[in-house]
Length: 336
Image (cartoon, rainbow, N blue to C red; front, side):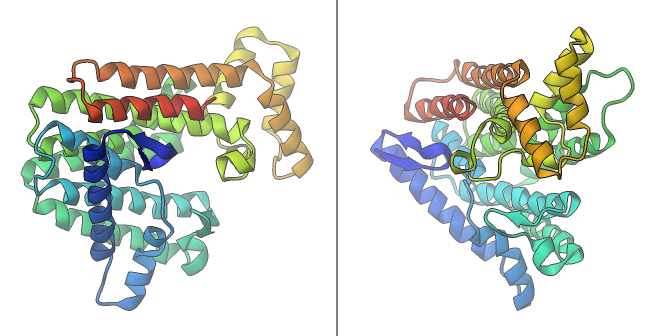
């Protein structure tokens, strides 16, 4: 039994483990090949985050989903490279928008080379993904284009905020469905589709990926508040400090508006203050960790992860299905 992919996923079937490990190794080679340029500087910038590592969550889902058809079909590894290149490209752009200084434990591209280079490098990765995609056929191009539209729409909706009268929590979940769920869903879809799995199986795995992607991001929201730096690998309360209203904060605000309790209103006021101040930030983190809103956000995370698991019910029992179930359970575990 070997741990592969994110969260230390334990693959208990030797044949599946061999397939997944070989597939991920091929994807890694494909990522380095796809990020080479005749211009050495472009190669350096494009491979910056590839070399920094990462969970390779999306390629793992491609490999597992391909187990429901011909797992050796030629389009599987290239499609996994496409989804990971697309994901990496969005990270370059996100770091510019968020003015992030660190990504995956290394200096972000915008910190190292400036915003213009970071944005253009992201564009370069999108171009390389499109080049690979063109060889996978018009249906693959259409699927990727629709997912990318949803991803960008989610980012725009996050930037614009909810319209007047719109529930902020519903708005936020829609944002996550676009920003995160769409590409995770495509990872599952590509794996099944490229393997020639039945359309019903493709649909099931796509639904699973969408729900898992949202659950994965909600778990990150909870971890940002609840975990210490040793546990999560990043500084706790990063989103709080940057003024990003993730689900625990939105649950707090919803409760404060509904019940009007003095402690809730005071905590909302504290969150609206300058949390770059270390003392204020520490106090906000302490209070939010003890607040019922955090437990509600955990329950929301568990619900999405359980919905992902339930979506798998029509699939035949096999090692790949067991691994996908374990992934959904791992998300619940991350959220505590």
